[in-house]
Image (cartoon, rainbow, N blue to C red; front, side, top):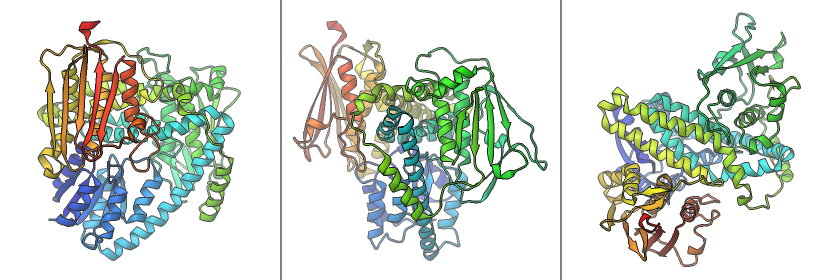
Length: 628
């Protein structure tokens, strides 16, 4: 029986992957961070390693480096299994010694093909090494191309609207980890409920707001590709009526012929997001009305004549909206105001831009898309490097602090976040009525747990903006703690059941008759989630997590402490700054910043004590209801 080591800091995703591999007849071991992976690779000697990149303490890149340096493990094939949106992370993994990459959530066909390639009868070390070198060369070209398009788009945005460009820079940096974790949550839910795929589409829309191209991008290698319009609309939901011109050429359905660097899925996603905003499923900032029931008519006209060299030339008409309104939406200021249709239009324009084309609103109120048949993107490395250096010189430095852009950040993500929150509510209801999940309560709990986790992550996204209004209510702190412990139950339980070296003991002590606090239940959950996650990441080798609550000087004091690495006295004053982080390859740390912001908004205060190699204790003080 072939042995596979799976490495991921998301326990539910780890168990899902392990179960899929065990069903295929493999022996599986699991590790939750790079340190465990390096140790298990040496002692267990697997035939294949599948590892995440973004993990606490030793991430996947450092783990790959350590595995390749050890003669005992140097020849073990490694697949990078990641939800990272950074193409350069994936390229770096290949350069350090990974053999292949697989995106999250994983596709079973891709998984089976990779297993056959690395563990099948025709696999060999020589073949794998040659294949890896080919992968590195291809990844290098794609990273350069993505970097060039990224910079070109930034320059274009700065010319059009500097505030929007700067907001996107901050949005990219601040939301990276949240998007990564949301991919895990939605991917797990989709494995049990296919309808959760809708959340993944919305999340892809959110990642399109990042200046870097989305993880979904799969650039073609210059081959001619024929795409029919029905195929292009695969993301279409039954919220609008789409009419397509029956323009057939040589018996083919209406569509487009493209050649060069292109992402068909990206183009389809851009159209889908525009139509979702048109139908009201992605709401405006000032819109909290229920979903629209009326379908909107959308007409797509194929404008190509008999000359196939024109490539893609489509006109989209939205009869429900006057031309004057659509022309207003072409102004990026409407995106910064949180208009969902303006956001959908901007995302569509970006996808067209990344595919080498152009998109604009005509004076008659039509959306005109053109993508050339032969892409203008060069595949010459030196030419791309020259273009990159030229774009870098055109980019201005951002001098204003990110707090200046906080209202913009909230408006930018509002519609997509609200649509995902709404969909999560539907998923939770459907899960509780699904016959298969009812018959398998363990799977039902997994779906509901990840649904609740994703909900709090989306609230974190809101707090990176101006912060949501917090309705005050009586909050039972014990109930809030138990709800978060349930959300994180797999992480704590997995370490206790599956890896003795990763054991985390939880000690909880609450004073009897503790009064409720004047707070907001979801906000308190956010605080607890961020603090407990920080504590768990501070103890990769195991330790003790202590949770306690008592009355102190007329206030409810909640304390959370860990026996992890701790921090120096020089570090402590900076930990609540959004620009502070101890994590590798990051410029911002949002978790503690969000915690402090919420605590202060609730009228409380937070204190911290820490010593290196001893641990850290956070003390939170809240107003009890009894003193109101």
